[in-house]
Image (cartoon, rainbow, N blue to C red; front, side):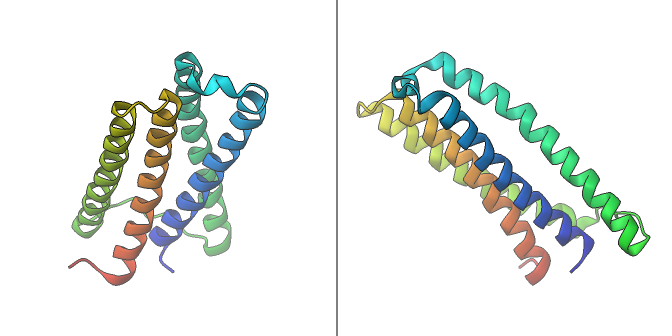
Length: 149
C-alpha cells in the first residue's frame, strides 16, 4: 500500500472515530438528559462550532502520529508533493463530496419546508457532511487503487 493510500485510510478511520465519539459525547451529555434540546438552535450552533476545532485538532494529531510511525518503520519521510494525478483525484473526490452534501442539505430543507422539527434539519445537515467526507475519502482511495477514467 502506498503512503498516500495509508494517509487516506488513516484520515478516513480518524474521521469516523472522531464523529462517532463526538456524537456519543453530545448525545450522552446533552440530548439524553433533555430530548427537547434537539429543537434548540443555540445548542446546535454550539455543537457545530465546537465540532470543527475538535475534528481539526484530532486530524492533525492523527497525521503526526502516522508520520512518526512511518518514519520509525520505513525510515523515510512522508511524500508531501502532489502531482497532476493527485490533484485530479482530489478534484474528483471533492466534486463527489459536494454533490452528497448538497443532496443532504436539500433533503434537510425539504423536510423543514414540509413542517418537520428543526432538529431533524440539523441532524440531516450534520450527517450529510459526515457522509460526504467519508465518501470523499473512500473515492480518493478508490481512485488511487483503480486509477482515473
